[in-house]
Image (cartoon, rainbow, N blue to C red; front, side, top):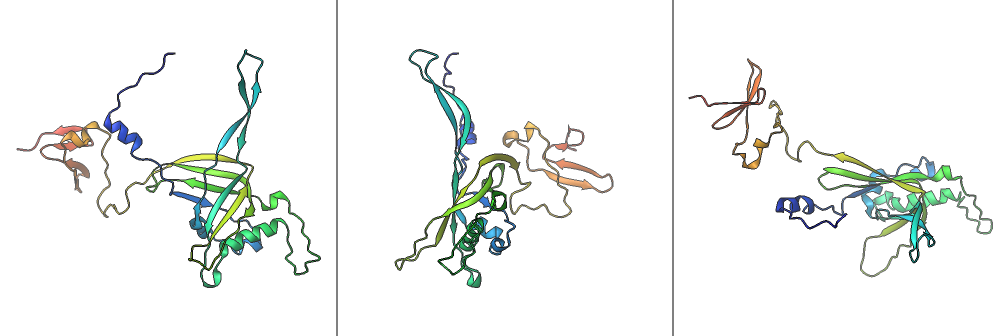
Length: 264
């Protein structure tokens, strides 16, 4: 097969393909309720979702084996399974709302303490713990990537059987004040990528007035920008229960598809 040759590309094709890139600042992290009493007392779905300000979409790789005996001087690699990242880092802003502050820290600390069955006693010499069964503390978490207009495909990464394995240190200082941040590392078995399409019927702020029928254009090339047809005028006759599009100088009847000449 010969190599493909460069082909001319029109400007509208370049705009369509390249002038609407995906942005990194539109995402949402969802951590479900753990159904653990001592953990869910600090659980707040909206707080966790809005506080997660940074993360990374997971990567994937193929694990291969080498083959050097098939062809002289050639080393080939053949896939034997897919590999996954072992963990994902979620970065949170720490909240403080009067008596309900630091819920982000307390939520993950309680989750980790529950996993190890930490009795949190004050006797340092008799401290002990017994780890829970995996099915008792592992949950599926979700990372959704979308765009600011909520149109087009939405990517959702589902991390199966996840649980926190580490919380990074959070420096505090008497120097210039900064936002307190908490980084939590989650371990998971693997992830699944799901995609679905979302669209809005109208842009925000564009509301159809009450009493005006919502009639859309038929899919016809003549309704393009360069067709010369003006903005449609909706006329509704309550006696005949007919709706027509009035244009100047012609009249278009969407029911019949015919163009009627103007009345002299």
